[in-house]
Amino acid sequence: MNYNAVKLTAPIKDYLWGGRKLINEFYKVTDKEKAAESWELSTHPDGESIVCGGYFDKLSLSQYIEANGGDECIGTRAAEFDFFPILIKLIDAKDNLSVQVHPNDEYALRVEGEYGKTEMWYIVDCDDDAYLYYGVNCEVSKDEFKTRIEDNTLLEILNRVPVKKGDVFFI
Image (tube, rainbow, N blue to C red; front, side, top):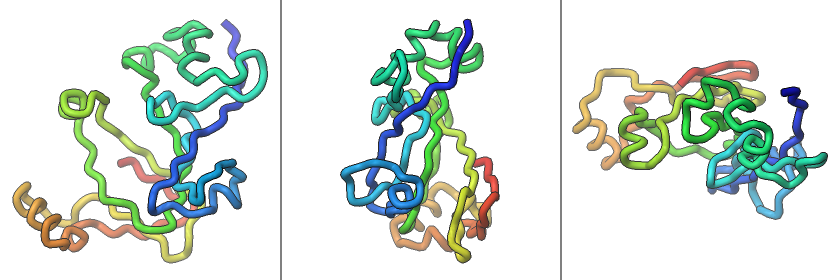
């Protein structure tokens, strides 16, 4: 089959920590006050990309994939999953995001009905004093981790990493 580029409209998420850069600088259209995330490539049930224009106009990305050969359209590695396994987001973190711990596939499938997450972050732009927390800075037991969450001292044991435009993190 011959596949052509497809323009997608991204769902916009307006989480508490979001800002207005995606609206003002990336021209994302939304009626929401904030745009924390723009899901550029998504078949996730919480927000699917929608084809914009052409023969497949207004189809969800899942519908587009199915209409174009399903597994053949997305490649053999992606076809090993129950759904398209990539989610590409633009994030505007005006305020602090929550600290996240992503489970492995076994736990995530059992408890959440989804695969675990591997993330890769590319810093498109950021303020001069921007940073992210990336892993822990010491060995920590499950009990200590839980206690630090409860007494609000978790940040003391997390790696605070300064970031700049163009940095890449495999998480």
